[in-house]
Amino acid sequence: MTPAPYRVRSRRPDRADTVTLTLEPLGGPCPPYLPGQFTMLYARGVGEIPMSISGGRLGTYAHTIRAVGAVSHALCRARRGDVLGLRGPYGTAWDVPAATGLDVVVAAGGLGLAALRPVVRELAAHRSRYGRISLIVGTRAPMTLLYPRELARWRDAHDIDVQVTVDHPDPAWKGPVGLVTRLIDRIVFEPRRTASFVCGPEAMMRAVADDLLRRGVRPERVLLSLERNMKCGVGRCGHCQLGPLLLCLDGPVLGYDRAAGLLAVKEL
Image 1 (spheres, rainbow, N blue to C red):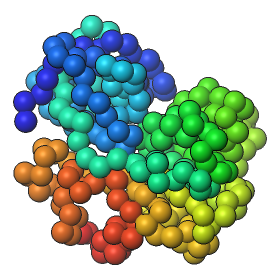
Image 2 (image 1 turned 90 degrees about the vertical axis):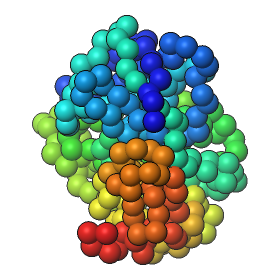
Image 3 (image 1 turned 120 degrees about the horizontal axis):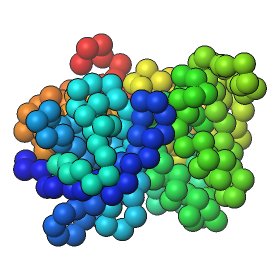
Image 4 (image 1 turned 180 degrees about the horizontal axis):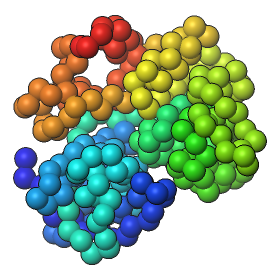
């Protein structure tokens, strides 16, 4: 429960309200992480919040953070050289190896792309192991889209079908408009031989997962990331309980075969 000190090695503004911080430990090695795991990030004197690991090289973690509350605002104000607290990594991971030999559909809504970025990087690094790979992304507006250069590189250099839709287009936007589920009609995959990784707002994840199941994707091959109300990260406080599950321990990554019935219960 005691955060370890981590120094901000670099700070990159992504959008007006979003930054990516790369953190390195002040003492001892940086514990390895798996795609999909999260940490608890602490801003001194303000508090701590769970945050998906969005990348990082050996010895560092990268976190893409959007300023939406007191703690995230404090974290977004951090500068190079500042010291933050960090606990983790915690939780279950995306089972990328299980997708070997299959088509892959990665679906991201808003900041959910940050949690899925390590997955896509892993897929791109070992492109020949997988069939067709599609990445569908929904965002509020063109100006809120994360990692546009990386999206272009995945498309152009790694044969990944990248499709983006926005809710509120600007005059220069020429792409799709509307829900991310509409992009499923624009991609090609063999449902019975497909693995899917989904992260975003809960309603978006349910809609994408249900659509994939209707098309024949097996529910245990549709993985969701459910980071709801986490406070302690180690299964003690109960804030992240979802029915019989504690998402900081049993999740955040769950197969839709386990999550569907729980997400269907209102206010659970």
